[in-house]
Image (cartoon, rainbow, N blue to C red):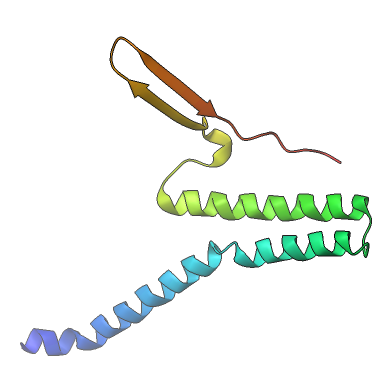
Length: 111
């Protein structure tokens, strides 16, 4: 019991640090603000506030940011970066008949 009382300040500090780490990871991997920027950009294009060329340049930057966030999520989950990933693979069936489907991410477009 005395050990518990002596360790209480350290336990509280540990709890606070774990909570801060969790919040930081959530913000580090939150792509909602980036998606909002993409939506705002699309609205500007539809309202003819920007040209299609400006849209394409800004859209490419936003897509790069989204990919960076996805890479951070994969890193935190222990998965390889998307450029090392072989895509989504699925196999189904018995030993005699089977099917395999693989999806790969498109390469980055240059404008």
